[in-house]
Image (cartoon, rainbow, N blue to C red; front, side):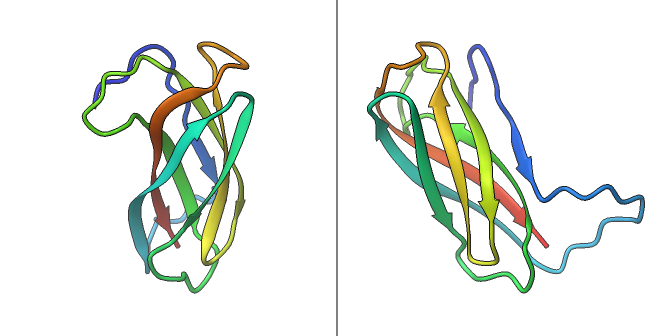
Length: 111
């Protein structure tokens, strides 16, 4: 995957801890955001299996499959639960403009 311009990276639920990291449950996935009409779009991504406790989530926007759009997006994770997370996505290369591509969101979630 090539990334042009600005790369925005978001994480939620990151704890300040010096203990070695151990994970009981990890999930990686991609959810569809679709097109946007300008401004900020809110999307809810559901985990494949529920977590036993609220996981840490790292996410990034992905361009439409087999495409070469030069759109640039930022992503903020608003809320994380044991079953899903909610993210805000905004186009930043042309603020206020929408996008026509089928945008996706790639995530890594770990307890």
